[in-house]
Length: 195
Ligand code: GTP
Ligand code: MG
Image (cartoon, rainbow, N blue to C red; front, side, top):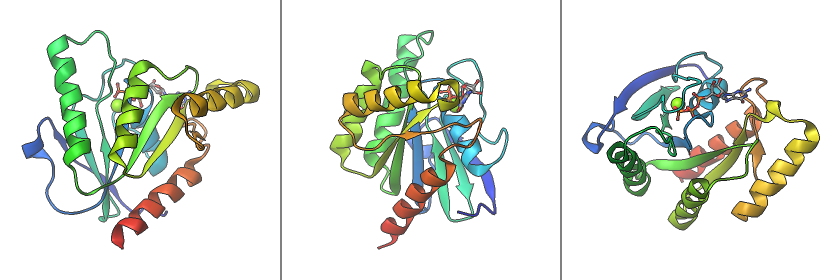
């Protein structure tokens, strides 16, 4: 995919603020600090369009980006950030699950897990949720540059086993590893949504 334009559209804390129109959307989700915003910037080959931080909980609302004037990326808030009060925590879950359940133009859900750790209970819950939704999804293991080849191989096998999936993509926002592969999946989802 040749990215000719990428712009921030808006940040939405509630459904009424989701952007209108029927452009297809690709959503990025996973626990806080896993690398969602970094993956978006890396795919677009820009710095700082999606705000990243070494402090978990950076992205607290749904952030919409318009790509090539044709489709959108949605950076969803991360879950599992312990230092957030309970009330906000449930609001986050609510924001994400209602987006996933209601958004008709969602064509692909990209679930991120940290390649350095075994999937957590919350990762599994999200995975089950997505599986039940029956919509196209892709699992990406982030920060693969932090592991040796052997460690990475073991980690990918582990994620596959725990999730019961055949395919898990090892990504690195540092090196751009698997960038083309993720774009291919996005393009396929966009094409499939048009028929
Ligand atoms: P929240 O918005 O808090 O939910 O986090 P996020 O999932 O958007 O994570 P973010 O992209 O902000 O990345 C968190 C930290 O991990 C940052 O310090 C990034 O630089 C780092 N990081 C993300 N992806 C990679 C990667 O592939 N390799 C390495 N080495 N670091 C990464
Ligand atoms: Mg973020």
